[in-house]
Amino acid sequence: MRLDARVVRLEAAGPGAFLAAGDRDAACARYADAHDSMIGAFPGALTPSAYRTALEVTRDPKHQRVFACWMPGDEDI
Image (cartoon, rainbow, N blue to C red; front, side, top):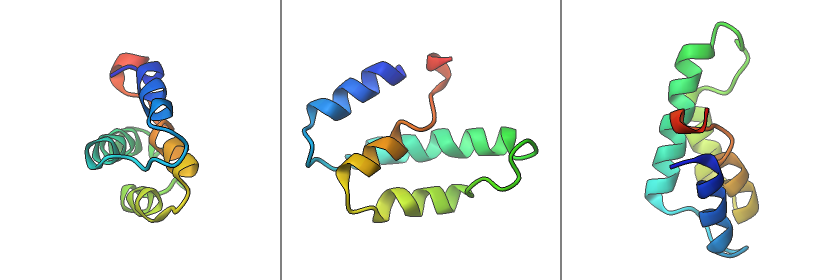
């Protein structure tokens, strides 16, 4: 799914809606892929497990949506 479509879908869920499990898993997978290929350029980046933890423990739906849209998918590039 393109980044703009993800953002529209997340915004349509309303300001109090947290991510569905599938959206959370997809965001974590995108982050892990980017982390694996770019860690040499960004050695201080969050680990994939730290990213997942940050996404899962945030108690603000707006923050969770920002984390979920942080990393574009291949079709967004």
